[in-house]
Amino acid sequence: MRGALTLKPSYYEALKRLTLELAGVNLGADHAFLVETRLAGLAQSEGYASLDVMIEELFNSGQTRLAVQVVSSLVERDMHFFRDPKSFDHLTETVLPKLYAARGGVGRIRVLSFACSSGQEAYGVAMRTAELKSELPNLKLDILGVDYPSQALDRARAGRYTHFEVQRGLPIQDLIMHFDRDREDWVIKKELREKVEFKEMHLLSNLDSLGKFHVVMFRGALTHYSAPAQVRVLRGLANLVQEFGYLVLGTNETLNHINYGFDKIHGKTGLFRKREDIIEEPEPDPNIKVPTDRKTFERAKRRVHSLQKQAKS
Image 1 (cartoon, one colour):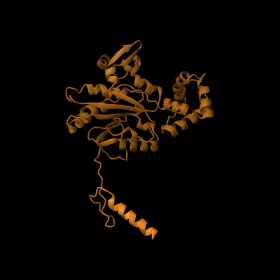
Image 2: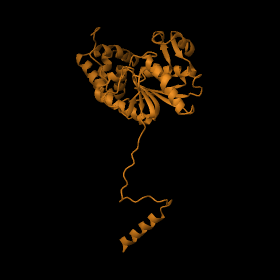
Image 3: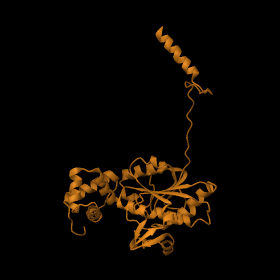
Image 4: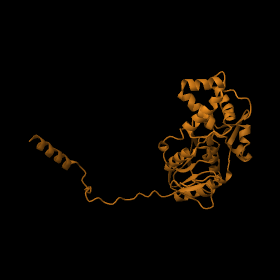
């Protein structure tokens, strides 16, 4: 454990349990250090005199908004541009070309960046898509990033990154082409920023309101979740992927013993394709009447009148 700790020892375990219950994420053995580093900035930005004062209020008042902010800060992932580059290769060399060909080069392809944090993955997809214009001239993507409400998500919406952040994985040509310098920071250019949308979402909630996607990206986060939360998240994501769509995990991640309706893509670790949705026709029940071509309810009305007369007689 590093550095001086400022909170009561019991608070560190309480925050660990809170994060597991609300977000399904295990903070790990070094969670006390994580609490100190992640939450000190939140306490300052929210106007608390100290981290201790903020945590005291959290557990004394049970304030929902503060609980969400605290947990969001603790589960925020440390992101950088084009982490796990092989999965981006899967996207540009396999996923997008196949989807483009299957759709005859028309229509829009929906891409979800799940647990997007500060947005580097979503913007990375937009940058790589721009490079495919000569090969796939009519390619159009709708890119959505979702995560818990947090300062990281606010930074994603602004498309603003520090000099340190753009040095982590971003090729110099992408920096020149897609960013503008603003004092000490670098800001995604407007034309690229407008291609990406970000939305607050409880990642363990029902995700159906997001609609269907051709591609869902959920890379490098699976191991942080508890086993029950992994199942819950993957089932939710499986429902979002259209048939013959793709789930992109990290190249060192797998679906383990449950396939969730996906097949592995041979030679492409971490890439899975959704199977066709097969709707089995039930065996006909002889006791159920077959619908007719009747367009009105006249016969039903007559039957009701007949029953009413019988009831009165």
